[in-house]
Length: 130
Ligand code: 5GP
Image (cartoon, rainbow, N blue to C red; front, side, top):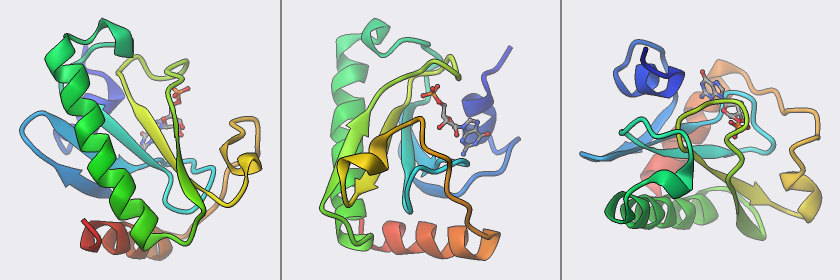
């Protein structure tokens, strides 16, 4: 059965897509810790990041780097934090979280709420900075 993230890649489930290439996909997290919280995934369905083959792993990191650089330009923040948890969705994903302080990347925090219009605008801002 396809993972929820594969359904996002296939367009079966809508998302605020930031970028995509042949092998990787980036989109806004639906329950963001901070404005611009983005998930970067390989299109291949592998649960655990360290089970990816080396080429896919390196490609994913390079793709995430491009997105992080754009995030840093588009969203006012000190740095973009990087986290991998994977406790909820069994499809490798890197969290990129624009941070003002370390509190912004505490996954126990209540999630931020944005309207669809705000999310659309955030997505466009990031995509424009790529
Ligand atoms: P983790 O597996 O790293 O513990 O958490 C999964 C992350 O995926 C969470 O931050 C959650 O908000 C996000 N997420 C789960 N389902 C969806 C979805 O359908 N769409 C989007 N955009 N994000 C999701």
